[in-house]
Image 1 (cartoon, rainbow, N blue to C red):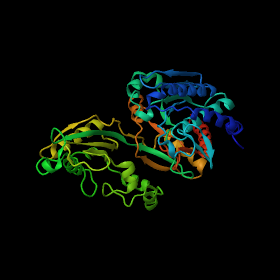
Image 2: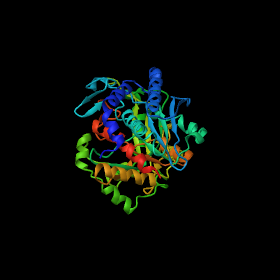
Image 3: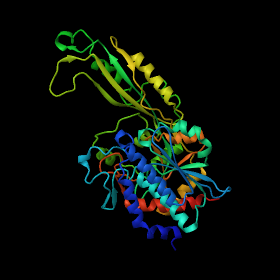
Image 4: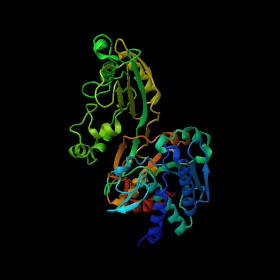
Length: 456
């Protein structure tokens, strides 16, 4: 027999899809100033949705950046408090010519909801709010205390949040955080995220002369900035792919045999993965599988390398300056400031003769995040997912960065449980972003089951 909340969601699905489409039509692109008004429209839409879900305390909070929507529903002093996190901002839709339908004109095709934000993160957070609405409509209230923390800056690094959360710790206090941003390993394969990587980086600017020069007259006698930068860039890795920066791995805790066995459980077809991205071979730190490197080992990547003449045709110059952008994904125990310091020291030590270097702004900074596998809220999430899917969830480590996760951990003492239903092939951040319609349906029902399972 179906639960009352499931019957409610079935009965109101058409209206809920209509409401979701209205939300998706708002171009809440946080990185573009021309969408400031759209950001506020989206925030007010979230407010109305939370009120429709029965949340008694809902307000828009000014962060100094884009507004934050906060909701609170305290039902029982003897029940735990979950803070449900998500974001209403989206990535720019470019390039527009690659979309099969308008990025802000949602439609359903082949069992998927297509629109910018369908998966990341409007579809996910909307389904979470519907779960609370269904519990309110059928039971009068959720079974535990819930708070909502729905921000508008995730796609630009959540820069306003660390200080804002610190200043409002009492307001946001909770036992744990449920993240409605992310996804499952596959449509028929649930997963639990145990960690996400931190972020650090910088730009290196190298100069060899006051100005670009005639290559015929100066190419044989004055250092070429591009050639010098190429040699400096090459020094950051050993030929087999290990990061060569002294001290880079000092704070990294290696995977245990149990953790490596856990990762090996993930059904990962290496050749299929290579084919999917059009690559010929893997590359990276030796001694680890591709999945281990993606989720549990630190990285140092070149994001841009340029200098000299880059236009059409040819211009015979000896470049006087070159530039290199570096970003690092960090694992637990690594600290962004320390890593940037090690990169600078390495660059200064290996700077080629005849060149000078200066450093540009860092690529933002975020601490890594990890949750213990036996955390009670994570265990309950696994039990609910196993009931829904009929199979035990995989344990995953995320190669990406969610800057707010370690902020909640540090400021609120609250670990984050990722509980979202994006799927491979959703094209988040890319043209034709979508969300599997069945996954969207599953998520709202899963939130009802999960909140009930969390009740003491």
